[in-house]
Length: 275
Figure (cartoon, one colour):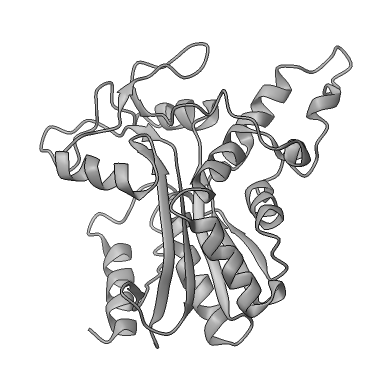
């Protein structure tokens, strides 16, 4: 496939807002994990929690979209000059020629969990929770679309852990087919009860900081983050050369014991990149 340039990108996580603190944490071998302090009855585990989201407020004009996930999206969009790069692309190509493709597993479900704790005796939500566009998996993309004032294709991908990787594949197809000239891609997920207790019910959550690839590893540590990238035709310092996708249908939550799904996806990516 012809390469696409990644002309802007940003990432916000438990180690800080933007690329600089992430790079510093990697160079220092420093984790963003801390003992779980999320929720009224925290599980005995470790989490990657972004500081300050509880105190954040969206602009009044965006009050309809207020929730933890969209606050993190707002924080991420304003890091590393990304929102300015996206706005420049909108002016360059036109709002209808820039796609928005975002991945999320839970979107605003944390706010929906809160809403269900506030129902009245007749089962009705309080007025401030009667926001039907917020309580959907598409909430994140609709919110970011409004922030960036984009009018092109707007897509949500929710395929669990692969969600924010698959956005690059969808963007490449849209650009290659001439549907758009550029695409804002990325993903945002935040901590919520459904995620923490859901993974715990699968007996996948470690009671200590996770140790990837360690022979004594005993589970995962969950966190929250926001990341965005701008894809356009052409070449640059950072490029998307290829991507790969597969669906081995081995099991609902467990990969093939020989890793065949991952192998097929990697082979596909290398073939597209001509490597």
